[in-house]
Every structure is written in structure tokens, then in C-alpha cells.
Image (tube, rainbow, N blue to C red; front, side, top):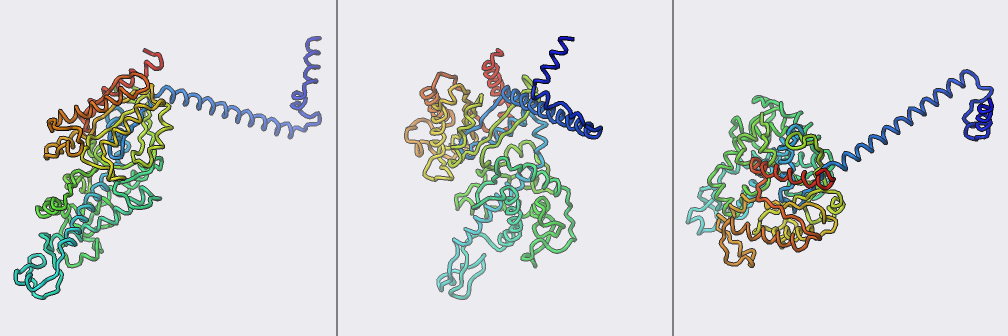
Length: 496
């Protein structure tokens, strides 16, 4: 009794206990309302505790996850490397994004066609002349027709009226390109050469929905009106832009209607000669699909893995990709890969990601004869070497594994095979043999030297010769890269 009396006195002296006691004159209704409030407060408290516990578990998972940063200048192959990672180690995740990539590939093809049409227009404009008595005497005129009146402007280009008609029909693709670009980058300012997306904008979801809404549309031959009113009078045939169909805003349908014209124009020997005259190699454009137009422009087109890896899209900002390893060593391991924009204007945004990554894959294309789009005075390879030096000497990255990809080896091989000499663009190369083996060794040694000299502390030098659009050879390389990163990560957390 004494103990209970002491406890009661203590409770009476406690202000909090007195405040929590129900009123003496509490009615049954007030008591019921009070109990409901207490139960609701307990429910909210449990929810808060659960959220805190979930956040703590998520933090621990993220802390244990492997984080990789993809670095390199614009068009160095960062996004393509990411797609190779997903294809090789997380194929189910990769398959879920296939619908979005279909639209990107179609847009890549349209961009190539647009550039081709621009070159043809440049050819016509540059070859315009005015008839004179001398030209009339020589019989030079428009598309092989002999001029008869002085003062008439005519073209000396080998392109003829057939090419003009095809160009007019293919112009139907340009509004499609503008609309898709607007969907991808609604706040885009000045026109850009690449297909651009803003990181974190949910662009894959937008394109997946667009693809699912249009991929099953048919192309009836008898619907009205014609695709382009300006084509009245031109011969209509299936597979040309003059075919009549249901939805002129459907990318798949418009490309299918233009397929024959696309193939005819691209395979035309006169057009190829004009491209060579203007020193334009569309084959070197990122996201080049003109050689695959018969397949990509088909109404029932479904992208292959190789198509998706080759597709070109430029990331503006920093995009985080989270996926779980589905195969190989330690399946179930969580990975975060950061794909950052490589343009010079966004490189200052890289630094916040330096503090918490286990590895950096640095992509350096051996493009010794090319310059930056942002600054044509700067050699692309010199810019890569400058970036590599900055990464090597950064104190925040002292414990980070650096992996160098000497990328686009296929383009290097084609460049050297065309007779382009390295010494013309890199005088220090001197009179060394102008072949792939010696050129690769020369630049590899340059990167190795800066890595050894500038690293804050000694660390291994990892490098690979890559062509990341080649999914098969890249897969073998990435297996080794993954095992090395896993080993270093396990050592860092004292597991091995």
C-alpha cells in the first residue's frame, strides 16, 4: 500500500501526468472522442516511425550500393555505355524501355533525312546561274533542258526534277521532327543538332506512351486527304510520301509512307556524288540509320538491342539510373550509374557527384582530327586529355577507381584507312607509323603518364580499347569492368 500511495503521489506531482488525465466531469461522448484522438495520434506516430525506418533502410542500401560516374565530353559514348551495362546485366530493366527507344530511333532517322535534304538544297542554291547567249549556245540549262531565253536562272547541278519531287515528298517528315523534338524538350530554346532530353524530365515515359498509341495504326491506301497538298499531280504509289493514310501525325505511319522515297534518295548515285562534293559523311553522324531505312521505316518496326545501343540522344544535366544486377557475380547487387552531360557549359555540375562514387568510367574517343561543336578551335582529343588531367588530380577522387575507355576504335580505324595522318593534327606524333596499333599506344601512353604523375596517391591504371556500339565486344569488356569494380568495392567495405 505504501508503495502504491507513493506512486500516486508522484503521478499527482507530475504536470504532464495531470495534463493527460481525463476531466472529472468527462461525458461518455467526450471520452469516446478522446480515445479516437489518441488512437489517431498513435497511428500517425507509427507511420512516422515506419517512414523513418524505411528512410534508414534506403540510406543503408544506397550506402552499400555501387555507384559509377560516366565522364567524358559530349558524344564520347557515355549514354551508349550505360545502355550496354543495362543490356548485359539488367536485361529485364532494359526491355521495359524498348518502346521509348523506338521513337528515338525514328527521330534519329528523320534527323539524318533532314540533313540530307539540307545538303541537296545547298547544292541547288550553289549551282544557280543566269542564262547568257554563251550558255544558250552551249545548251546548258535546268535538268538537261536547253535554255532559250537570256536572263533566266538555271541550275548546273546533276540533280534533276526527279530528285526535287522526292525532296518535296520527304518534306512531310519535318513537322514530325519538330513535334517530337518539342515533346522531348518542351522548354528548348535555340535549335540543336542532336536529339536532346533534359535529365529527370521523364522523357522515356512520354515516348513510351506515344509509341504505344501509334505503333498499331494501320496505313489504309484509300483514306483522304493526301499527306501533303503540295504534292498534287505527283505519281502516287505505295510506300511513298504521297500515299494517303489515316494519321499524318503518326511517326510510324509517315515513315512507312516515305520508306521507298528514303531508300531511293539515299541509294541514288547522283545524291552520293553530291554528298561527297559537299564533304558530308552522314555515316559519321551519331544515330545514323539510313542504311537500315527499309527496316526502321516499316510500319511494324520493333527496335533490336543493337538499334537501341546505336540510338543517339544527348542528355542535358545529370541523370541517375538505378538498377539491380540480374546475373553474374553477386546478383541482386544495386547499382547507381550517373550519366552526366559532357558539354563544356555543364561540366561544373560534375563536382557534387565526385564525393560518393566507387568508380569513374572515362570515355575518350580517339578523334584526333575533329573539333568540339561548342568551340571549333578546340581539338576533341586535346579536350579529352585536359579533362582526364583534371579528373586524375582531383583530391575528391583520390580513392576512386579510374577506368579509361579509348572509345570509337572503329572510327579511328576508318580515319586512318582513309589516309588521314595523325601528325597533321598532333605534331608531337612525328613520323611514327600511321596505323591503329602505334596511334593507340601513343595516346594510351599519354593518358597513362598523366594518371601516374597527377594522381594524389598511387593507383592502378585500367584501360580498354572500345567501340561501345559493338554490343558483343563491349559485353566482354564490361564483365571484366564489373568484376573489378565489385572487387574494389568489397575491399573498401572490408568484406574481402
